[in-house]
Length: 87
Image (tube, rainbow, N blue to C red; front, side, top):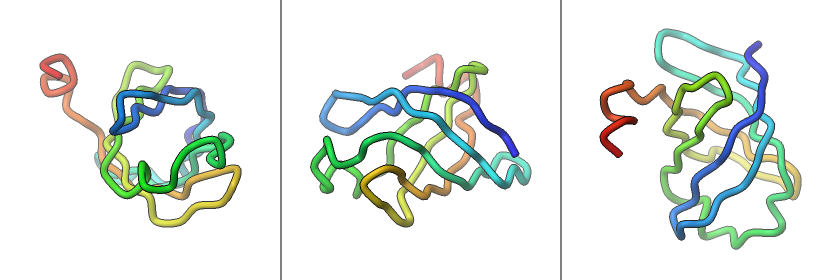
């Protein structure tokens, strides 16, 4: 399991500090949970791809597969370093 802290970049330009728990790490794929108070945000913001900047320097493009008031269940892939630097 990969755990840590990161910053979730939302589509409206805002973001949220999150804790993450990725249970799987097959190749460049990730799946797990982002833990934060999701009720502070409009649900519509979670309907599009978002990026997670992890504390280890990696960036993960995530999509939500399920949600609650305190976490998002996500699936995603690592963004190659060249793409992350260009963004």
